Image (cartoon, rainbow, N blue to C red; front, side, top):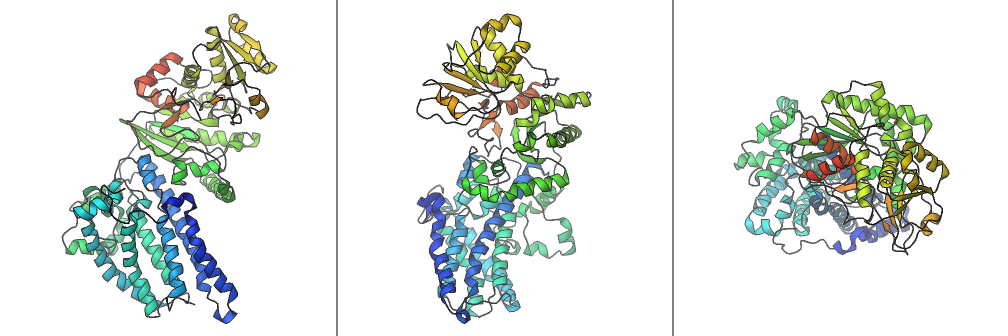
Amino acid sequence: MASKPGLLIDWPWQKLGNMKYVVLVPGLVHSVRSFVTKEERERDITVLFILPILLWRLLHSQLWISLARYQTSKSKHRIVDKGIEFEQVDRERNWDDQVILSGILTYVVVMYLPGSARMPLWKWNGLVLTILLHMGPVEFLYYWFHRALHHHFLYSRYHSHHHSSIVTEPITAVIHPFAELMVYFLLFAIPILSMLFTETASVGVMVGYVTYIDFMNYMGHCNFELVPKWVFNIFPFLKYLMYTPSFHSLHHTQFRTNYSLFMPIYDYIYGTMDKSTDKLYEDSLMGRKETPDVVHLIHPTTLQSFYHLPPAIASLASEPYSSRWYLSMLWPIPYGFMLFTSIIGSTITVERNIFDKLKLQTWAIPRFSFHYLSSSQKDTINSLIERAIFEAESEGVKVLSLGLLNQGEQFNGNGELYLHKHPNLKIRIVDGSSLAVAVVLHNIPEGTKQVLLRGNMSKVVCAIVKNLCERGIQVGVVCKDNFDKLKLRIPTELWINLLISTSYTQKVWLVGDGELSEKEQRRAPEGTHFIPCSQFPPKKVVRNKDCIYYTTPAMLIPKALQNVYSCENWLPRRVMSAWRVAGIVHALEGWDTHECGDIMLDTQKVWLASLSHGFLPMLDHPLI
């Protein structure tokens, strides 16, 4: 929102929320109806191109979002080396409004303007006219309008909304108040209307011009330099006709320079070219070598979770994961991602964070949860994890933490497999089990005398049970096999507090891996606390007994942890899983030991270390 909002800053369909695309329905219905009802010689196929063009523009935008987020997480060519936060993601959530507006205007033009009907696919004279009009009136008028927007009166009422993003993403390019964007549309309409009135219009040139505007807009705001220097060495005059991401990035940091749209020639003519433009371009192109200190290794869970990864759909990544029906129709895309990454045989960098002087990255193994449950995929996935460890080791990473099923006990022995194969690793491998145990123990309500254990056995579960038995808290186990396994893993003097229970009367349930059935949950007493002690949450089904469902073991992160703009799986904003936090704390404390296999650190020591670095318990935020 602008600092002093002016007139017409809100979009007309703003109150429709996610239903805003219905405003395109009248135009779509009218165009299809006119095509179907008219005789063959009068039909205008042009109207059928509008919807595919709008879909192409949405896809084009998404491709730039994914590319920019991936590059700024891993690439050394970042221009502004700062982070973005959830506030910016929320402010830029309506980036598709300009696509909707263009759709409405296109339907109106096709229906009512002469020359728009039955356009040919291509006309060279229309292309020449568009180039000349864009280089002249469009770029010239934009330059002076843009300078006017930086006058205090207009800036505070309109343009400050766009400049709220110092660190830009591609879609920052189209984040403007409604009135401001309408002026831009009028400017870009000059070549389009001129082609229509001179009967030189064609579908190809129209689509090409709109794609050019989108491409240059998104490139200028992508925050990494990608224009190679040889382009300007071979064609020196292009420096006046084509800007670079670093050119426009300076406008967002300096404000009073580099006003041009896509062609810097007008900044050269009127003396507003920033003096540091060339140096920033060369520095950004050269890049800076950066080695992460900590890497957290994850994987997508379900097919839909692919869209919640930070480089995917920005709005979804900024919210806790939840299933959405429309994503089910896009299942080929996650499979395509998996196939592509299988060919290149590597992990994907999906996020980059900064915590004081500590540099953090999140890497994703290109496999889904159901692959980890398949015995045929076991060797392949372990090879990918092993390769990620070697890559991190070669880059000088200090700590690699294993997230989700990358540390499965039946899969690789909580990471012990890699230590057995490579005992001389300098990088420290952390499974985070000690902090996960500490978080679960601190979630158990005061005064608890009995707990019920559900789910499969794991390293974390056994450590929790041992600690509870030491406190004199009775642990009821439903499954006889799990009861026998626990007796083998805790001292005999603690067996007195371990019992088989099928009454389901306990009001604190510890939920490990494995399905917690709806039938069992309905047998829980009123007010039961369901506390996960695994990396996956139980499915919530009881809604009428005031039951409390906790998140999986996690902690609130400190404000000093920056560039956090996505949610970790199903966790709320600015909350990290205990396994991920454990790797960060391990590096902060400089602990020179692995934590994997049967190795566990002192639970209380890890807990206090986490608190000392600003991580906070979620005692006031128990609900999923």
